[in-house]
Length: 575
Image 1 (tube, rainbow, N blue to C red):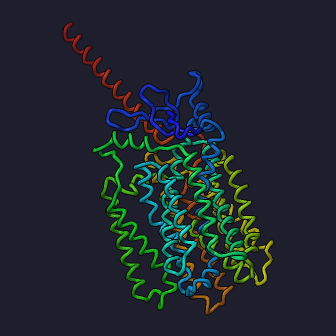
Image 2: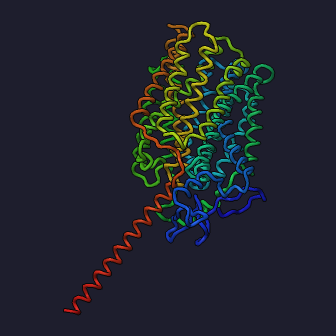
């Protein structure tokens, strides 16, 4: 790649090469109308077969990294996005009882500090994904961690429920900025192939690792010191990540500026769909709020503000869908759903990730409320999930190009069912090694394989200019699925608690999770077809090849027509 050094480091700036410059994967040149032209990757030898060349390029280190250490720094910085997001989700459930007693939070309001983070995150993902496509993933990524650090620092000083909810909601804007950019950066820098598979596998492995880290520090804080230290430890980690990200992630600001200037005033210019953004964000907030709060409202779904907000939120989402279908700059363009298997995969992932949210929260509740586990015991009981996640994801990165994606996600779907099933059938006084340990292993198999395969499928199915969309959709499905399914699980728990008791009400929730995972497995097995994640041309390169082929055909046709005309004229002269 054309390299512009930043601060003298080993990582350059993503840029577009000059005309006539050697083109390599991910490189573009501007054509006459300002649109990027992607040429096919060139090899070192003219005799190298195209298939061999593409396979080699899918394995080698991207040229933007001058050394392996530069690439390691990039992967570390990107992976921290998963660690910190899960840190602020998982750890909060452990310190929540301490917060309830310390700040005097009513039990009916205790779910909101936990929900506010994920709700804000999910609702703003599409907006920041579009801004990432417009102005670059690098600035959005770094800014997200700075924002998260700021509100984590302030959150540790919360004095009441209102301040805590406010800080948790604003914390969620940080991941909404950096999560779409993290997926986009991997999708842009790495071309399809084994190396990209491995990076995404490491990225996915950091989700259970972050979940464990959050529980670990929350357990220590709850046991030995003031709860605010959990926020401040997260703040320190966010600051460290912001610094390493600035130093190790290639900047795409200049590249986006050039494309923006070249496309200024044309239909190809990427713009913000402000009307769609407003209706989507407000609609999602009201819709999800109604579902989450219905379990704690005075009269459940009969409470006026619950069904009013649900109806208004649903109507706003219908209006947003209408806007998206009739605007050129839709936040979710119709072309996204035209990708083969995309629609059924979205529905299946929504249920998969919803199952994950239920499992993580209610497994914690079960192990503390039913099994009597202490915060530090939770750390030990969740350790297999974190360790297994690291091992499974890393090994998966080496075999994703050998096995069909459909077979992998169906295998993960079976694991999704077994994980909650073991909790659902666990007897009173259940043994950890017989029920909890295998459940943790199945859970990590399900999330790691599904997350990695889905990320690779999304990023390789969309063009470079839509990698922000790919990142935002991956994370939107994840966090919206968690929020909605947790809302319904909370309803089940609330309505069965008095009649069945604590343990059986948790069992009812786990059976609901089994049902969600089962429906997801059926959808994936019957309607989703994903091939092996092997080295291949990118979407942009395939489009360029098709355009070149059409141009050659047009040129050949015009030449033949000219020859026929000349032959006709010669025949006329002879006559």
